[in-house]
Length: 340
Image (cartoon, rainbow, N blue to C red; front, side, top):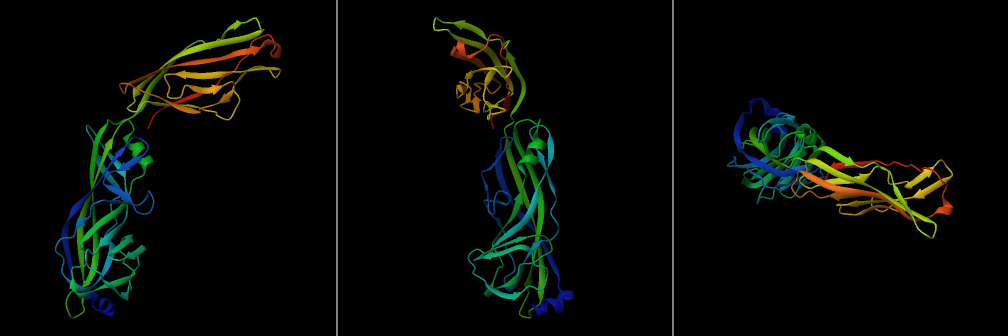
């Protein structure tokens, strides 16, 4: 590496235009499901499934992998069926793949070492801009430095949800440009020179919009009671419900408070446990005799636009001797969300 330090002023730069890699996925409003990309260090480090082909690079006996030549753009313009949106994207780093070559390690880097400078066999992973791998790589005999390259990136699903909220369903496509550099021994003199390559990352997201425009719930909430000869009382009240919106996977229905007893009460002296049933839901019973059975369920939509259901709230065969005469009350909150 001493030659690099002494002869830097006489090195020349070469710039070439690279191909593009593509990362395809689908988004349901909450989660990105990548179909031609995968994670390498958790969900915040994604790489395209297919590598960029490096093309014909100058064979060299020794080279030093570099990170991004310039900091990549912080956002990508995604063009959709009707409009376009800017989405934040983080290009974290890049991966080099030497293909069939098996380089050995050379001299330690004297420049700034990239964060996450990891080497494994023919692959080197780097994070950061204007930085280097921790050591040079030696090819005997001289070979092309690397055969493939690809970026490491991250798109926050919450950011994508925010930017696509209210947008139409369909394919959203955008391109972000990035460049890498590396230094390599040009000839037998040991002089290092720099190669800069430009690439494009194409992002394709198939977005299935899901949202609720209205929830109608019709019913008076007054329980009509009946009595039997065993001095017991029963009663029910019904609500007819209709959810409308863009509901490709139906509706998620949940009880806001699943950690409570569901009882009709008169002050603190008398209570009646009740049940809540949902006709049209995947799980019919939400509450049984005062206890939560299913805190959430789903309501299917046959056409992706409406989801009808009905609620029955009531109690059966409660001994009159255990309750006081007079009105008993309670209330509970239901939460409706697109099922995504």
